[in-house]
Image (cartoon, rainbow, N blue to C red; front, top):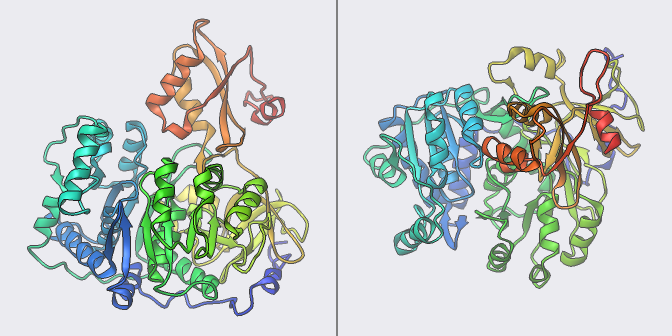
Length: 561
């Protein structure tokens, strides 16, 4: 059936906001760097990035980027295609590092700073990264993982390195000595970020010709096996998503005039593309929030700026609306609240609209699609409960298990085709072939239904993936870690609803050692898994449901739970 036309064709186009085109020029720029350079030319004197009350203009940011590029090229001998890892939260050094790496022709490997040594070692080894820039708060984790990686060059930065003068020195003193947030570490030959920048100033950077086909990011995501895979995102993928977004937001936002709050971590694909790339293209003032979990401090920061764009996930929206001080903010400048990363709950959306006066505009995407696939129109006045409409230059198909195209009102797996779809999985041709068919459609693993007006409704996930606070957790990985415990005979992991995090992890464990306790399992998980992957609910049982070939049936566990 898929040999013919898409069963639903492009019925979503009729619901596009007036003036939004179905096709845009995704080849308008040669690379992500070309977009950045244009923004610097157009908005050089305007605020670019702020963090802890310190602001860098676009021109100042570009100067720092050029210096970092020079260091990578002239001192570390980074060449086109070399992978460079970045392990930092939202600080001013992050955009400097990312644009600096890309300008050198390198490939950015984003690392979650909260990874355990085991997780970090896998990603560094798999990517083949030889250089990493890491915030000192997480250098002890890197030290533990280094022996299992190809890392040769380590650049260690501190929280206050780009805050300047007394403020920067005071910030570093507080972080190290007062709050004691920097565990002891010793990495031979590591170079401080400020020393690297000093060396980078000695020579100009070397311009590297870049094309849309060149690799820009290895953005890691889990798979059905739980083994993290690097999605190969090219300059063309990211530029395409920027161009698609530009068409979508053109009626609502003004270039060089917006203030965007970046509380979601930039190493996550949602914030990376939307906040860093798209809003840099439009000359927005990007306010970087390093620790959004400190809600009182976060709200104080929101008071300082005439915010116009806010991006978040359901848990962040939910946390804010339950803080009285948030409702006292001046929302007169707020234009857009964009939700992604996980489903936005109706109750949260309603209360957000009540407090702020603007709806949450829900979007949908995946790491493998750079990430944007669907967005609700920005002229929506209420929360729609849908993931929106496919964006320009994007085609979709909804298929059943027999790989046949389905029509309106029929639930099936969403397949996506467009210039934002990744090139493939890094060094995994078999996994790539499973994910992208011969016609260029990518299998999302999500079950959706399309309405007559073209809006897509997300129904469920085809795979067993669990989403905790917007982050993907794969049960196999958790099960593999727990099964290493001598006292565990069998283990299964499922997700269960959680008002705070969307979903939380529940473990079913068959004991080998009768003395095994919940506390033992949680302690073991904390040593080997990032915090959001650690189960909070553990149920001991005599046996686990299995199929006739011995496969544990998670769906039966979900039913019983």
